[in-house]
Structure formats: C-alpha cells, structure tokens
Length: 312
Image (cartoon, rainbow, N blue to C red):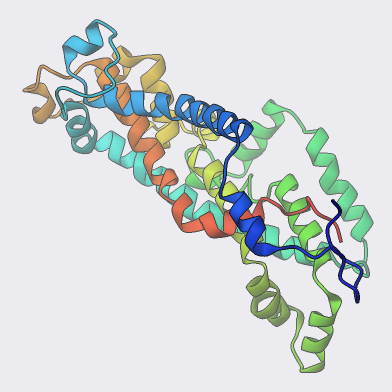
C-alpha cells in the first residue's frame, strides 16, 4: 500500500507516531547487527583495559603472563616511580608545552591561510595552492632537512617540534573547502557595516565554524601530543625528550634507560616494580590526557567529521 500524498506539495505524508513506534522495536536483523557491533566494541576496548590492568598488576600475574578480567590486587609501584622520577615529569611538561603552543600556532596559520586562499580573487592563489600541494608529494629528504634545522639553530630547541610542522597541508585543504561553503552574503553585509577582513574572520566566520575549528584543533593536538620523531632526531639532550620519545626508549631498551636514571627512594624500597608494570603505566599516563579532551569536543567533533562529505 502506497503512502498518502500531501495534496499541496505532493510529498508523502509520514505518520510520525507509527514511525517512532516502529523505530522503538528491534527485529532479528537489528539485534544481530547490534550484537556484532557490541562484540567489536569489546574487542577494541579490551586491549586498553588490559594495559590499565597490567599497570596495577602484581609480579605473579605478570610473570605468568596471565590476564585477569577482574583485578585481585592493586600495586601502585609503577605510578609512584613515574611521578617521583624527574625525567618522566620533564618529558611530560615538554610534551604539554609542545601540544599547547604547537596547536595554537597550527590553528593560527591554518585558519588564516585557509581563509585567504578560499577567496577566488586573491592574487597568485593558483600558484600558491600548487606550491602547497607539491609539498604533499615531494620533500627535500631527511639529510637536507636536518642540515636546515641545524643552520637555523633549532637543535636541542623545543621550537624544532613546533615550527617545521606549523601547518598540515591536508588540514589546510579541509579548511579551505569549508570556508568556500559559507555564504558570501555574510562577508558582504559585514563589509557594508565597515568591518575589515580580520574582523570578518574572527568575529563572524570563526563563530559559525566551531565544528570545523574543534575538529581540526583536535587532530592537531593529537599530532603534537604523539610527536616523537623530531624529538629523537633533533634532541641530543635527554632532558628535552618529549614523552612519546621517552616511552619509545623505555619500550625498546628498558635496562639501558634505568641505567641512566637515578631511581628514587620510593621505588628503590619497593621490590614489586617490574619492567612490564612500568611500561604499561607510562602508556596509561601518556594516553590519558589526550583522551580526556574528547568528551569536551564531542559535540563539535561529531559535526566536524562530516566536513566535505556533503556538497551543496
């Protein structure tokens, strides 16, 4: 039976009460799909749960490589070691500074550049866009890049993890595509009221671009927080290593790392500390701060990820 048509608009008339009632019921196919999705979710969450559990596990459980779904004992030796060891705290502060300053610079350069390049009448726009796209496929190589950073005096300088990655070409293109979807009447009306380009950008465009801004900022923050390659490449001073580089060093060569660290008295008196516990605890500490950002940006992130998926 075909649905009734609206006489004026000739569009199908939807019975919202029946539709809501139908949505509330799950058939066998829906239940199977939900069960599969729940199983996949558990498979995704379980490794994180196992990491957290091992960071608290006792030496017996670790030595036998047994995974317990419910913890029987809690041992905070690894976390005591981390928060009493200056090297871990310094690495955490380095990563925190790089993430905060780097994300701020990333957003400033990306948003400003995308707004300018989204204007069709901007002189030399095609040439600049071609030069930007060129960097996505070609680079000068590692050795010339290292020599350039050395000539700029950025060796053992935290700015080496911020300035060379001031803009991501892919994120810049996403911002340009988003700004082009905004109606031109907004800018025209603002110019009639006497606003300049900077005022239009920061008082009008950014106010209606919060989903895109939050999404790109989250992507940049995750990139800066996970930065380790530039730290390993340009930092010869171990006190300037970011947290992820220190984590890599810990996971690859635990004994060598401990030989260069003055173990605190809290850990020295605790015989329960084992390499596996320390590795898992550092993983938890390094991942937890960036995970805490997601709940605050969730309402914008769900909208921002759809940028560019629908045209018109």
